[in-house]
Length: 297
Image (cartoon, rainbow, N blue to C red):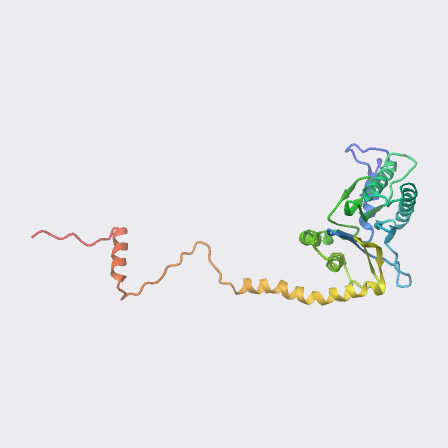
């Protein structure tokens, strides 16, 4: 992307029908630290990488609690994420005060999408440069939503946003069929494995990642530092087993005999066998080399 005459205003269309300011905001989401979300039939798990500016600074939190039944993970501009988090908390409080019940997850996500869309058609505003993974539980079960600065939102079985999220998506696409019946511990391990695949260098530790869970009979809970350490340790224990499992098919394939395409296998027949002469005679007749005709006396 580069500066051109059509990106000075969020309401200016390019001849190709594009809003460059909105695309720049979506690019800011791709530059943020990776966040992963996945759900089963009973729980939803969020896993995020915490980024630090330097070795002297602390890690920046990317997961926020909205209500007892809902929370978000962000990728992009953290300041915009905190602003939307405050708005979502206020909406949940107002809904609980008026209706004496928790706010449906889909309704709040739709309000966030509408709020983001307004910023794409006002010349004195700018789009939010943050993407959200919204995890929650309501009367219809667990939900996982993803929002975009353009105002779009989708519900997912599993999703990853942020920098190098494609590697995490690849892992989720390979294993998503096992998520519905997975236990909470298995779901957290899948989330951490997907998050680990997005790392360009280093390894996953309890200092640079955080996990949040919400589900049936479980309020939104944030796991950090010592609370996430057992899952990190279990992840490292599983790595040798996975490596052995991946090496077994390769060894079996190497030991299998090589078959040359087009080759015909011929079973040898003993020369002195009882059927050796008959078989040779039949082949000779098929090839037109039968015995010479007998001459009349």
